[in-house]
Image 1 (cartoon, rainbow, N blue to C red):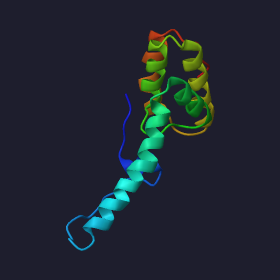
Image 2 (cartoon, one colour; image 1 turned 135 degrees about the vertical axis):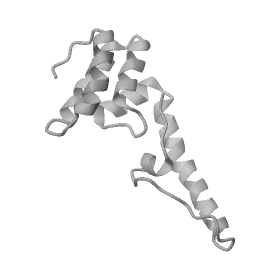
Image 3 (cartoon, rainbow, N blue to C red; image 1 turned 180 degrees about the vertical axis):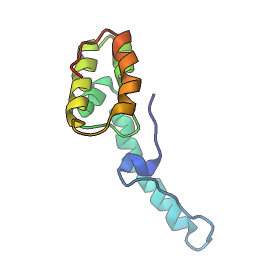
Image 4 (cartoon, rainbow, N blue to C red; image 1 turned 90 degrees about the horizontal axis):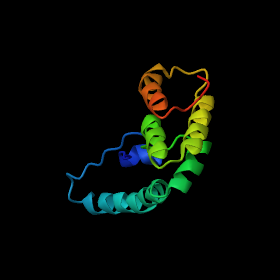
Length: 119
């Protein structure tokens, strides 16, 4: 239900690593390993717990977790009040921006779970 490229999860954007040079390869691999250990572990800690995921999603968008999938997941867990609250917080954060593509994917999820939200 969630996933993303390490750079995106870290908030630095798409990241690539050049491992072609044998002289720099070990330090690059070590750096990537450290990123996985810090960013990856922190992200996994967030998404593996519904309570932590909900708390985070109330405050900010969660990297690697599409809003419509999150709402569907929370409804599946029978946490519809939390799903509604997370969605309303997301809508508030994105007021004034073009979210039409997200709304096209969100509306069927909201309708399926009969969540009442103010668009």
